[in-house]
Length: 323
Image (cartoon, rainbow, N blue to C red; front, top):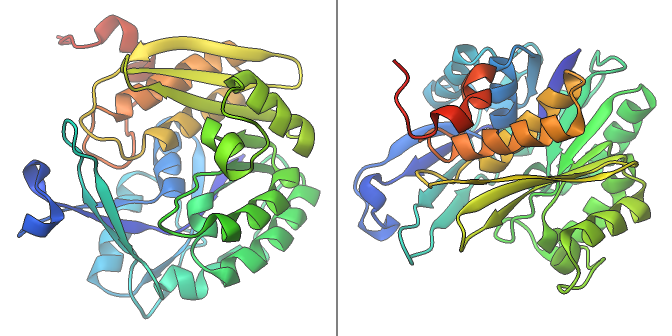
């Protein structure tokens, strides 16, 4: 069994010490991308992974390649072309000041050649294919290609994993909704947020609770499993929920402290997939996934890179020193 991730590998440039972008003169550089972040975590948990992407043939492309090598993410089907790597610039939030993200990924090697990576893959029944809305936002070429590719994979018995992950500064709601709706009937495990139901897909009103939102989307698109990590800003807690065809589960809420918000949802996704692959009970799976997300808030990296035991020990070692 292999987990494949299809998406763009990006470089994140972040000013140090919570500086604003307008005042920046130096940047820290991180390698990430939603699908890659999930694969990095799954690789640390012992799963076979393969990143389906395109990188440029120069030093910045090699920097990204090094990250994949270091984290044991597979590169068998990765392609290299002349061109540029996608980037984004992040201004970190502090106290009441909101963070900002500026994307610069138009005409990257993935944008130009990414669709070719998913042609004629030797994916087998039981494998997992991970995709997010951030990848769908790249351009129309990727979007036009993906439905046919997912349909073929579905027919081959591959499990389709999709995180809606809508980013309004990447594409408009008018562009996104028809594409997302065309994909949802093919999805085996959907990751979503309440606003996806109330504001994006408009399947529910804001007054309806999370359970109702999940049930409405599941019923409309016949999705076997749905999951979400719910953030309570006022209480500083994270709580995972999961809806299967048999039951609705609300996990334990965990307090969290933010060092870095990047990749928290990707860590949650990886935790859910790890539990499903290991055939854990769903309540155990959602608890593990929530702990993954809490832990990711404590790192400066884009992806959670810890062992499974570190996640299980979150409750007993939170804030402590293991000697």
